[in-house]
Image 1 (tube, rainbow, N blue to C red):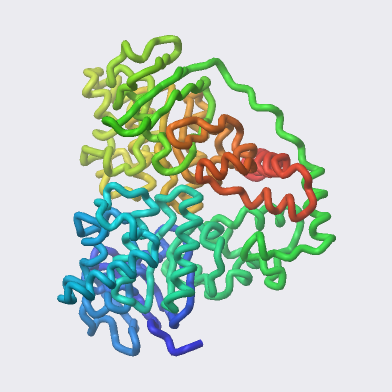
Image 2: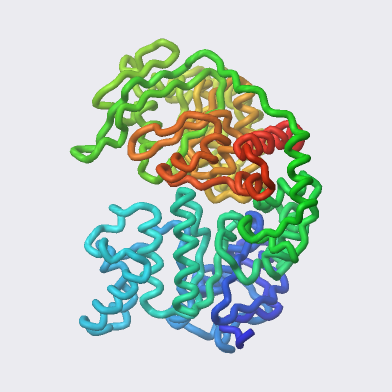
Length: 569
């Protein structure tokens, strides 16, 4: 390995506002040309480590540190934030929070303008950076006009323009649909090869990042580095399961079949894994020994949309002749590419937008006759970001808000709020301020604030975005419990694992139309639907093909059924 660009030596850090350190005895290096994935559960110290790499610690987040962090043998705490940024370029999880300019070109040029680069050279370097990420045709566009994937490219060009030595990506896949996520990983891989810069990716979606090779995976837990080695070594251990990170699905399936994973099998990707005949036979035997799930039975139709059309202004149709039925008590996923119409459909159902054509009925009632408030008595909507929904200081008051605005008596409010808090696992915190809760707990508060109104349908927009596997499982198991109480749950999601594991049926949107209405296993093994909706095939399907199982869709269905009935009953 070449001499390191970045080096941590017995480094520890404790925020001023916290009683215990966040990082303990970190020893870690980054050399030129390396590609490193940092993974770990929420709260393990990943973000704090990132802040130490890009200089936000010690300059923006204050605390006590021990040991050393150096860039080219110079201690970071003796460098200015400006000097650090010349070596380390950071692409944030939320690209919108990184934009400065009114146009794409202005945003990319921001760092160069601060360096007082002459105009001819500035234009040339901006164009070169834009071409490197294939965004050159959008230089005159406002960043707000771009898709999620395009925004990420602009943010990347903005840090590349200064030829940094380390590119740091903070959860680059969190807000992208599956196909755009693959494109993002492809782009990162391409830039890594072309620039020679070191790449550090912080992400808990391990299988999605390992779509392309990485040199090392650094696994963190409880503020410490648990392991630092090759992806093959990590996937051959039980460390991921022990520390709450989702294994690649094909690895889990192989383990269910009794196959022992070893580094010499090169298991880091489904396309590289080597299985001998006996191992393939174990997978076939496991498949043949599983019970085929029975056909899903749905209740009566609760909501019916018929030929709904909606456009924003004079633009193309955001919803184009949408016809769909939602049944009482079902668990439905809505998937599709960014901008396909998923969230617009939810807004139209809730009455936030009025369709230009078509009809909608709820339990036989024409929704046109109901106000937004009246619809909210039947249909609850939970936004992706809980901070955009919460308006009260105390948890109890937040959950009680909807009932109080409806003039419900305080005795009944108390009874219904307490019931909702118990169902949502928030009863021990009933007298706490909302600010004292974790992000996942805040999500539960927003769910409780809707649940207290006793809706028949709950629509949740990306409920697991940015959550590690443990918190993801907690949220989804909780929603499954609500569903078992008879509440119809609709989840808008980019997460293919969620579709497979929890939904009984999925609607797939593309270009304002519904292009698929089936169970998740059928959808994620249908090449045409996957291509048109920017989805991604499940690796389970590829494993079935690799092992000579003709019906890959049946293999996926039996895997899901086995997990639901035997692993997480």
